[in-house]
Image (cartoon, rainbow, N blue to C red):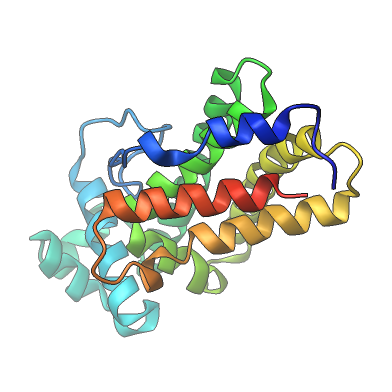
Length: 222
């Protein structure tokens, strides 16, 4: 899989030796690409629900559990969400919207340089995964519990996000087939999103450097 001229040298210059972990605001709360908005009670419900779903599984958590964790009596939850299913649906839609917006922003910031765009995408996904381990678990495990219409919306947003990566990788590997490019993109997600299971006792700064270096090496290898 040949790289464009000088891409190997450029990739060395983009290693994460000087990279630092940038904590992101809770993605269950924020809809944008990282700047965030002032959390509301509804946002707090989403935040604590994400943690509970990750710890116990969707079916192991009741509305009363979420209310207690958010400091609301069980029935008070229904002033904000009609059901536990609605909480999960909004949570996963928000995650997907935020990832897509952030990914597009990183590519735009690269101003046409595909290696810079890739480095930005990797840093964005890494910071997201390290900042939101509970959401990574819920997104991976509980999408099947979302109603069909919302599940289609999440899948559509996820596909668009994948295409941002595919387009960037295609520019780096112009002679590589799309099936291989797409497989490489999904492999990168698998590597980066493994953080809830692989971080161990490492702090976020150390894990950030490891993930950025490994992902960039995998993405730019021939």
